[in-house]
Each structure stands twice: as C-alpha cells, then as structure tokens.
Length: 419
Ligand code: NI
Image 1: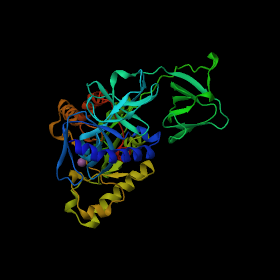
Image 2: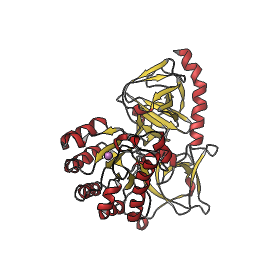
Image 3: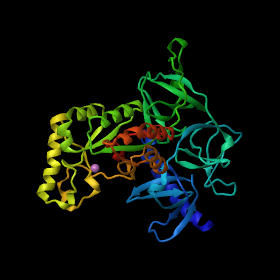
Image 4: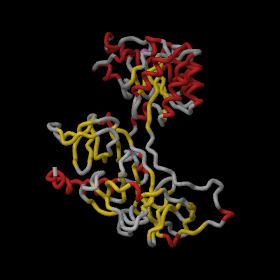
C-alpha cells in the first residue's frame, strides 16, 4: 500500500497542477470534485484490476471523462470509476482558524501522508461530505483532507474596488500564483478573510485573493440593501423532463401550468399529426421556453419503414413545427425507442432516448410515476413521460415537488447535454 502511495504522489502533484491551471472561476460551477453516490470500485486505467473499493460519499477529483467512465484521483491513486456512480459535490468557502498552519493529508486519517499546509486565515474551498472529523479542501494547487474543527464559516463584509486598472484575482495569497480573473474598478465584492496584504473576495463571477490596499470600506449610504453573505458554491443537480406524443389540447396545458409553478423547463417530443390538429397548444409550449423535439408524424415504428418513408416522417413533422413556432425541432426521439442506421442517417439533430422510463402510459397511476422517478433520479437523468395522459399531468406536481426538495433543477435535454 505504501509503495502505491509513493508511486502515485508524483502523479498526484502533476495532476493537481494541471487541474488548477485549467480551472477558472466559471469552471468552478462545474466542479472538478465529485462524490460517489454508492459503494464503488476504483479500477486501474486498463480496467484489469481493482485499485480500491470506495464507500458511498467518497471524494474524488475528476481528471477526464469518456465512454461512461471517469478518470479520477482518489487519495493520490489514479483510476477509473463508472461515471453514473458520481455526482457533483457541494462546496463552500471556509476560513482556516488555528494556531499553526493546518496539515493537509492524503486521506481522512491522522496516519496518512502529509501533502502540505494551508495558511492560517486563508479561505479554502471545502467539501463537507462525510461524518468523519476531516473535510476535503482545495487551496490553490493543494487539495486533501484537513481537520474539520480548524475550519469556520467566514464573516462576509462588502468592499468596493478602488483601483483605476482593476485588480487581478489570484488563486492563492501570492502574486506568483495563477491568476483566476479580474475585478474592475468600482466593483462591489464580498470580503471573506484577510491574509497579510491579501484579501479573499468573491463576486458572482470569480473568487480568489486580491491586494487588500485597493479595497475600500463602503460608507453606510452606499451599502447595498441586501447584505452580501458568502454564497456557497453549489453544484446544481439537473434532470431533463421529457413529454412525448403530444401536443394534447387539455393535458399539455395542465402540464404547462405545473411546470410554470416550479419554474421548470422541459422538452416536448411532438407528433406532427397532433401539431397540425393543435397548433395553438404547440405555440404555448414553445412560448413558455420549453424545447420542441421531433417524434415523427404518425408515431410509427421507423425500423419497419424505407429510407424514403423515414425521411418523410421526420421532415413533415419539422415542417409542421416550423410553420407554428418559426423554427425546426432541435432534438429527435424515435417512437418506441426504435431506430437503426437508416434512421440515424436522416437525422440532423441529436437522437435522444431516456434514462428513466416512468411507464406512465401503462399503469396510469400518479403514485407509481412518482415512485419510479424518486427511486431512480440522479444528476443527468432524462425522464420519459407522456403529455397525452391525464394521470401523467396529475402526477407532475408531486414529481416536481419531490425532485426540487432533493435539489434538482429542471432543464431541457439540450441544456443537459451541454457540458
Ligand atoms: Ni411515443
């Protein structure tokens, strides 16, 4: 074990350096830190042997993703984990308060290897996840475990930037560290800590260290009405709700009202024939900001058709949609999920299936729909429902309430696929 740790230490340092160089303030929302959603195995890069077995809520640093596997750094060990078993971790900025510079360790045990120290009075990005006495933190290029008791919630104070050319925002309290952004002259920032000549500040766009001498106290008349509090960096979990086979004159509209209540965006895979019958309903769906997908003209099984017939099913639906909303569909879903190469050849937009089938069309039971979604939802899920069944519309309020409570945001499939 010791040998493995030594062997990976060099890799670890290289990798962390790479991660910090390529990260910037905007990338922070798409955190490079994720946690395991269940007990999982960390495999070697050739998927030939097991490196470690991780329990649920273990912290990993993401290095890259491909083909359903995520390359991660887990306590200085590099390997692969199934992407579906990872989700973004919640982070917050915490202040280091102790008598000496706290030690950063490779894992959450006192015996584990020392990676470095974080300075007293610095602000670290902390991922408070497990119930152990350690917290995973990032400070510049250093990341690892620090004793939880040495970190406190900082007090936020508003300051204004008084520097004609603005200020460079640095990753750590040093002019030689990497620059993560800039704040312009006159910007109001939230100050979380002072560290020698440096001050850790956050704005909506950037977080890091700036030279403290150019930050001025805001006289009471200028203090913004809303006291600025440290905004925890929250990595939002997202799901895409999809509704097939509409538009329907009544059910679709009930669904639209419920989506509006939760400020949710969804994707409607419409059937061309119904678009012709209920153009006003489609217009309402589109005007409400939802995405419109193509689900063929007659809801036919495309794999039984000739290339020409497939083309006609797709194009006539696009024409019908465009005549109502002024633009083509942006995604496609084949009825019954049935497609083959000749279907793929006709597509100019992404072919989107689903990850959760509520089977709403089969059981017509709102409680069951809710149960299926609750049991299976995770970050990145695409949920299949149908806006032609009253029971689906009736289920939607409880589905959205349950997912919202779990911290999910509701986005269109195209938004979900943007990464
Ligand atoms: Ni369908």
